[in-house]
Length: 392
Image 1 (cartoon, rainbow, N blue to C red):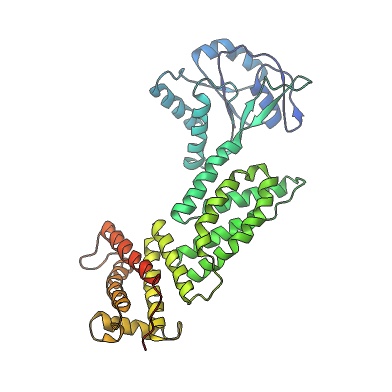
Image 2: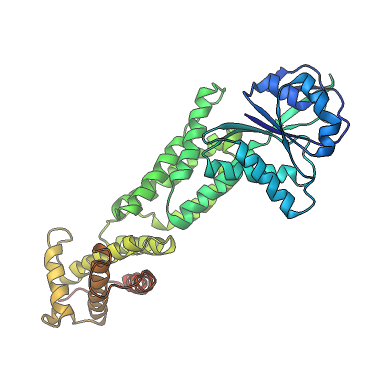
């Protein structure tokens, strides 16, 4: 399906070209697009003035359905134009948008419609075309530019922002995989080597955050620098991936802090886990932050009591539970352990409130729950920065 727009200009014939193929000479880029892209339906936006000047001539060269619009001299008319176009496009449609003869805000409006349709109707935007009449070559041939990469830049930005702010790399992984696969299908001279790999790593990283797998988070984060370095070659050779280059720096900056080569249960490893908690808080993954905070307290307790970090976790929890109800003062020998016991007591109540979905007496409101998680988990992050003092 093609959505185009005609103004009131006096269009002159030219030979339009796209991807090495030329259309017959015509004053109407719509005719050229029909020849070069073969859309099954064509809709053309026209004001009353444009209809009077061009409709009859355009009907001689291609079949189309007119979408009557106002000139857009106020916001109401712009919204009416938006609605008129959006209603014509069915769900799951593949759409080409032509902005060549867009007037005033019309190209911007069509771009907004494209973003809206992608989200609301699962529409695939195949191309956003602009026939550059004045950019003729020596043979008088005018190129048609595809501006869709600028729409993709919006998608790149949104996907990266969603990952950095929400910890969800689904959209980012899909974009990278799509470019990787498309490059192979198009049989270009260059075959990508790293885009799909980094996409999968980022998806695995967000999954590891979602189900609280800190060991996997740290392992995957340590792989990122190598994967990112490999992806740079693809970005330099594939124009579709170029928007990702500047965004990679943001990702690198965010996850460099998780990279370390020591033991998971070492002091450095526990500080790295504290950084994961901070990331979960920053990305509003509150349940994950609470879960990992409790486990980190258990890990710290094992270090204090010189317990095995895996085999004796149950015993460490018993010590914490006893200290929390003042039955066992064993852990209250240091100020650090006293603070851990206090946090443990309160986190236990929060854990129960979350796990029982609030179906208990006097459940906390969502707002109160989040406030408590931010406070207590923040205290855990601060305490873990202090070296462990084992009980003697």
